[in-house]
Image 1 (cartoon, one colour):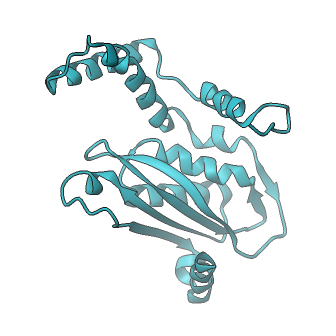
Image 2 (cartoon, helix red, strand yellow; image 1 turned 30 degrees about the vertical axis):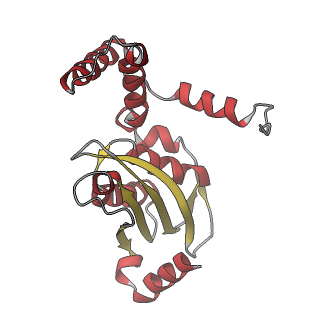
Length: 211
């Protein structure tokens, strides 16, 4: 593993980030464990067999991690990382990986977010854009709502001239069940401010996505 700037390996840094995420609390975790244990019984499994003994605990911990966006807020995520700037052109961060959970079937959808904004006197720290995506992705979601939430959050905290967000994802609720279409990709967009009002700005944004 490659050491990071402070001497940590990438794995150690990832584990530290996971430990720092907000936790559910022991009582809520215990309730989730009971729920997963009941689910195993309901499908005809034996939660006491060797391979499943710790599955309710592991599943509860996994679900806690996958939904930690409920225990975070935008102010904590941004944490003052907004800086004065004379930049006035499109700032775009492409290919931000996202993992979320469909609120209809509790199955994952996995994809990428492309987030752009036009500064109006301030810019936001680069990593904060990815963190904003994660805050909303790590909640039970539909992709359409997720796209709007990311755009609204940046608009509210930065007050830029415009925000553009495009999300593309594959949904396991469509791939593993139902119509079982393996190659379908859903794309959603939310355009605010000059991205919505100015055709040239919108065209520039769409052109940048293709590069």
